[in-house]
Length: 183
Length: 162
Image (cartoon, rainbow over all chains, first blue to last red; front, top):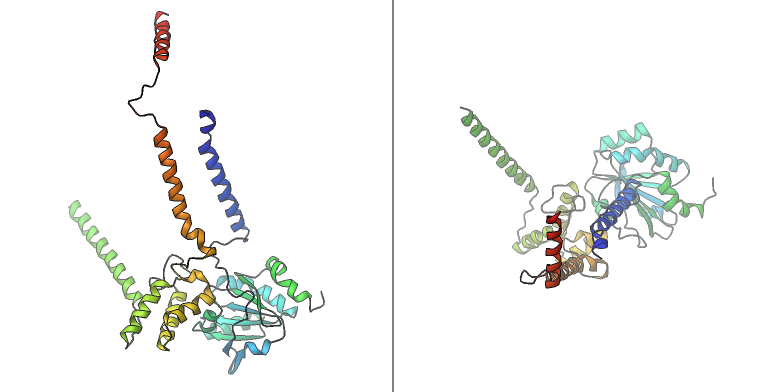
């Protein structure tokens, strides 16, 4: 009896160590982020967007123009390193015909225009949001964040952090296979 | 001499810390919003205490200087100026950022463990403590029975003889 009791602290230690290792591994793989905040928008109608067009002062970017198709909203800024990282993949998606509306968040206009000129523009349109109006409307708390909106205007997916092929395959790709011929 | 130098350093360090604290305060009050209506002012101060900064997650938006906190303060200000009441503003924030945006989350199924967990763990700890204390023999108890004592004496004597 007393002998087996002596092992209780060791077992407790092993159990905790196992738990910590498991969680750290999940974090390492990017499957779990303790700072993630569950989004409120999945399954709910997308908030409407009405922003000045970054590249055309006389134009406005409106979400109503996207009604009836599956499209993405990508919140980014030139100040955000992860946005630089995912840019190439957004270019790839754009060449595949995925419509992406960009929201340039809390940025310097000149910097943002330069960025798109030099690295290419993966967006159908870019709304300029220096005062976080759209960002708050969409419950954005960091960049980049990517939302998928279906043909009925319902938000179906959200990803916080850079978009990369694995995330795309797991979360987003299925919404496009239905309506587009596979590559 | 050495002592004086040290003291001077200490004074400088103290002044530096003080300056930093005051600097932080000065920063925090940069975007203090003015209301003509004291009721609105009170509502604003109440709300910025209750809303959580989502970037620096252990601070409310009053304490945080993160850009998102600044944005949310401005949004709160604008909504109050428009005449919206506390429930409307809280509803607006929760609809976008979830219960997480409330510094004290509401009591419901998904937050049950958050509220009840610490109490449960406390009760468990007290129960274990009581058990351990009860099991421990009090100092008045005799540790060995008379028979055991005799046997022990025998054994001790044996070794001495050797």
